[in-house]
Image (cartoon, rainbow, N blue to C red; front, side, top):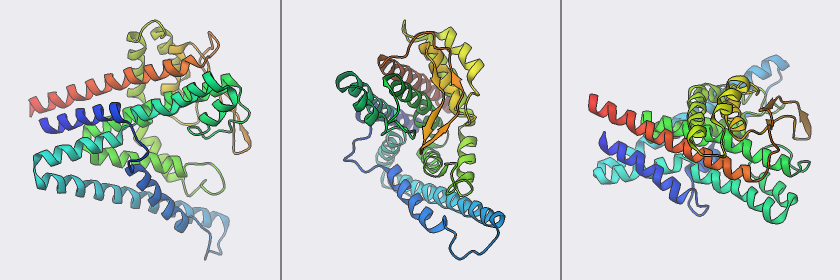
Length: 330
């Protein structure tokens, strides 16, 4: 097991140093391609002359079929890669695990993408900021002012601290890169299919619910780790307020998980997040998170990233400690 721990640490270090270079094909893009392929073939009404209720049930079952197909394919390919690598020798297996762990995590990628919003706002103004933030959020950014652009970026960092960093790290610690990639597959299906519109209301429902389930515990672990990060992160963070806003606002979201870390981040930075937003031309009413003890500013993007990094390091240390304890006990 000690070499699994080494691979786990090496993968995290690779993520911090390299991130996700665009010239390297990423496995999640391959998972996304499979999802798109199945979506086009399964999410259609062709050949069915049924009532709306029956048609919706058919869409739901087809969505379930897509989910299980993608999970099975991801699991099988991941197992084949690991087994093939270890069949060569121990070093090849450890390298394969480390590389796969690196590709599962998104710590540096999240910082790089969000800092593009920071750089755009700081050097080129709000229009450039809108274009930059539109690459990482699903809302309509054309109506956002500078504060709205910053708020969207900070919310993305806060939410993806759990979805893109802590949750995949925890699943990888528990079940290696195989379970880590299965988690990424579930998360990717939710991001591609979990829309509440006519096309995906029923077809994507199972994927969205499964994502809620697999993120339920990691989101809460992420929140408590982020609270700890706020206490040790320095003068820009308010640990007491982070805990206060978390306890009060952690359910101020349609998702049972998203506001867990968003509430901590809002409290730590003493700003207000969330609120109404426009998606696909429609205004979506959303509760506010945080009190807004001060006005949000683009420097908060850097601060949110720092909070995310400290949270990631705490999770890595905790995971390695637990894995080492298991190794000692076994």
